[in-house]
Length: 351
Image 1: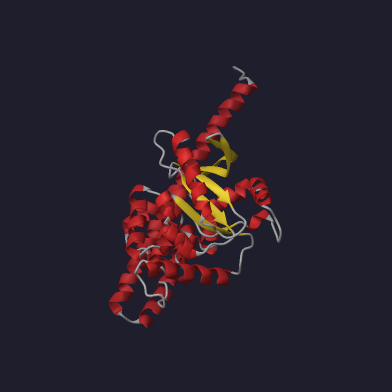
Image 2: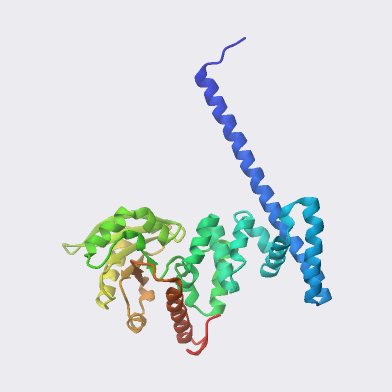
């Protein structure tokens, strides 16, 4: 009998274990995807039957009786509560093709996190961003709880434009700055309170760079701190230089302690033009500037037309306010932005 060397045996075992684990993972993903489609079809079929009868009492009785039979034959996964979720799933996602396109990355538990969202555009945003960026269920719930959609520039656009951007994201995985950048950014993990300097803010961000990039979102990579640029013999320093893989753009970040000031625009324009001339790589789009301030005045921002210069201004919060307070602030900002664009009169609510 030929004896195998221990190293050779260990190498072979490692390869075989890898093959087994990969296959098991693929099988589990396939099972989860097929179950999700099954739940959608069950929900659709029950919903069609209920609609034909047009009686609420009939629907309740039907769900209870179906659950009793199915749970007996197939287990607790077909309880009355779960059947109601399947029906809601089919109602909220009426297009089976969209469901099929999502199940490669989204599990049934992902969909359960999306079902309570009432705004279809909000729900579509989270579903597509979850698919593109590969969020776990926990991350998806955290994004929803932190009101990520309401913090994007996308949410402040007219409804038709939101639909267009989400359709591009669904069809082509096409990310835009309005999908990527937020306002405000919640930096409560920095541990800064009361009095601090810009250097303290920058130092805290570098200590917590992983959490900082997670708050910014998937696709951001750290390039440099205090990036030096030289113009006519004078040195200037960009606080943080990032890169976004999906946008394929450098992102120059400036940190400011107080409210936004118009002079910041000229400073950032200089940085962006220097980066375009000296740092831009083939295939990359022009760099974007992000000015993070403790506060800002909206009319000043509008008059400067910053987006034409690829500049964005966002507030940062060092303490997470109560969710109700944040929700009121964000909804007011969305309402104001849509009113300025002519979609809503200022007194109307936000869908």
